[in-house]
Length: 354
Image 1 (spheres, rainbow, N blue to C red):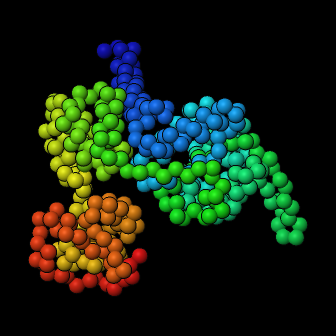
Image 2: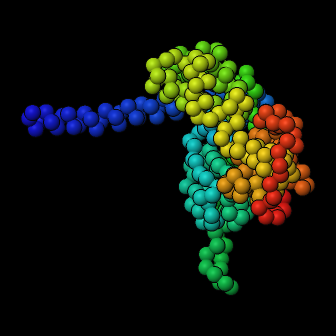
Image 3: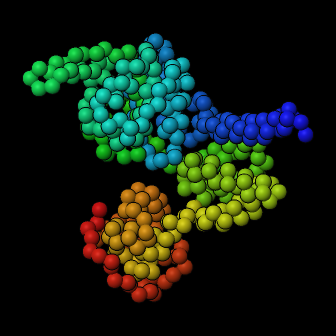
């Protein structure tokens, strides 16, 4: 083999996977709707957004600031992108945890072009000093820069270009009142029902080129915890399983895939079942404190409280009481156990309920 042939072969082996990877990323990115008309679910939020954006276009002004509140995976980031697309404005994306000083926010705000949409994800985790700077920026499109220290410090006002802030939070209760009041509208996103998730999955299956039947889509929707992000993720895992086993995406493929990935018929995963089983078998159904529960299953308390518990509470499997977490009759039935049929293990340590 000549050097030129070897070179072509090496180049082809390097470039081809890169091209295929870029194609796959483009397909995955296409799962996000680009317009409000393509966005499934959140009917009230879509109607409110449509009015705000259309009024801004008719009045030739930047749309009001918006706060998107709701659990993870319901489409807050997608809606921010849609706002910029519908308004015909550029989009700048930032993250609350990354803004730890007022100077970080000042650098972002001062570089915005007129009419730009600034999206700040997890805004409740932004530094307090940056939040206070944001008050003036949102109301008057101006910030004050402090130059110098001590008695010689001077405040220099800096005018900003008009912009639209679209902020997202999973914990709106952590935002200070003065910040919440400066948003023109707060949109509360709700969990999806099965019919809406089926629409999400049928659209995603079409974009991924999958031949999925209705029974398979319905099975996936029922196990997706009311969350489009989870639905799309499970659909990709079913796609992988079907590709490996050379089958079409049918109900049997869905069930085999979700059994492989430890997702039960109600959408509970391994950690959900570990928490539920621990409350039932180790503590006789509860009550048990958050710290004790987290130590028993080997997870951080924050993971239990903000990732696992919301789904279990929403589905009526556990209840938060002043004495701790307690399993409900539905939890006993789901686990196939009789209430009071197991011994209660002693607590690992005394703790207060968070």
